Structure formats: C-alpha cells, structure tokens
Image 1 (cartoon, rainbow, N blue to C red):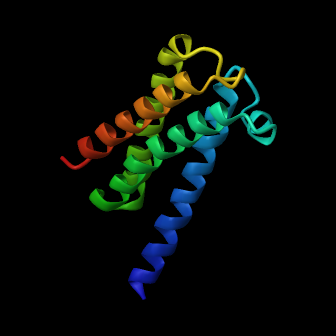
Image 2: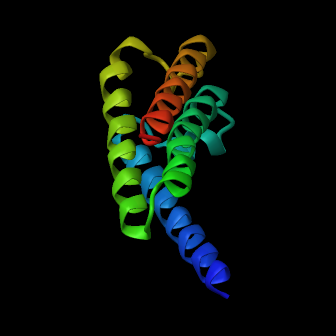
Length: 125
C-alpha cells in the first residue's frame, strides 16, 4: 500500500510541476506558444517539445534519485529554472520561431534536451 501512495504522490507532483513549467515557459516566450502551435507553427511545437523533454528528463531523475517528495520538488524546481535561463540566454540566437523557421527551432530543441540530460545526470550525485 505504501508503494501505491508513493506512486500517486510522486506522479501527481510531477504532473503539477510539468504543468507549471509549461505555463511559465509559455509565458516567457515572446509569442503565444499555444496559439502558434494551434496555428500549425511547427517551429514553435519543436521548441516547446524540446523544453518539455528538457524538463521531464531531470524531473524523472529527481524522482528516481531523491529520497522524499520535498527533495524531488526542490530538484525539479532547480532544473526548471535552469531550463528557463537557458531559453532566455539562447532566445536571441534562435530568432524567428514565430515565423516558422525550422532550423533554429531544431537547434533550440537539441540544446534544451542536452541541458536536460546534463541536469538529470547531475542530480544522481
């Protein structure tokens, strides 16, 4: 029974953390992420997908390596902030996402996932 409670607790916390990250990421982009995706902007979908993966990888690592729910939430918050900082730093180098330019979107996707992998492995102390 303890395992079921732990699963529900960690899964619910992870979904909330992912939702919060997605909301904040969408708010800091200079365009309406959800509107662009609804309008079939592939570049926006690629970058948003990269950000989601870049956050989810260390989130999964935090769930695996931490010893309690609070520690997991703290690590998830830290890695989420890192992802948001990376986006803010790189945004000027990957222009025209809202114009649908795919090449810079793929670059931002790749960097977001790479940073996510580094974040994830650094949690494993």
